[in-house]
Each structure stands twice: as C-alpha cells, then as structure tokens.
Length: 79
Image (cartoon, rainbow, N blue to C red):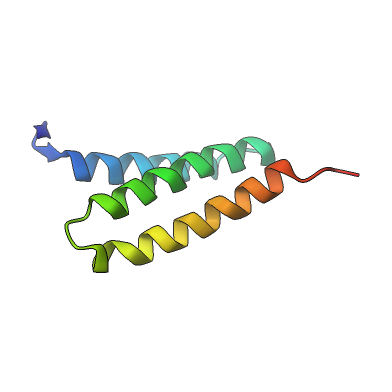
C-alpha cells in the first residue's frame, strides 16, 4: 500500500522520527518522555515491519530499552 508514493513501512518510520524530533522540543520532561515513548513504540513497529528481522532487531531492541527507561521515569514516585 502506498500513499503519495510512500509505503506504509516508510510512513511508520517517518512518523516515529517526527515523534522523537517533536519530543526534544518539549520543555516539560514528562511530556518529552510521553511523546518520545510514542516515537519509540512506532520505531518498534517499524523494526518489525522491516522484511528482515535481522535488520530490524537492533531498532527493536534499542527502542524497547528507551521506552522502558521512559516508563520507569514516568512511573517512579517523587518522594
């Protein structure tokens, strides 16, 4: 499936990149982590969509780790 000559795989990659880019414009650290987390999950999806898991696996592993760090910081109590 293509939209404007861009495949679904490419759209997911572009959306993931855009979400990560937008996250770095946030002044509020909580918003940064939430938007960055969305970008990470989109990159995980992108990694799984790549025809070769061998190529996508580094993208999946890295972004799952970053997502986990974001979740950790979003859920830890501020005692």
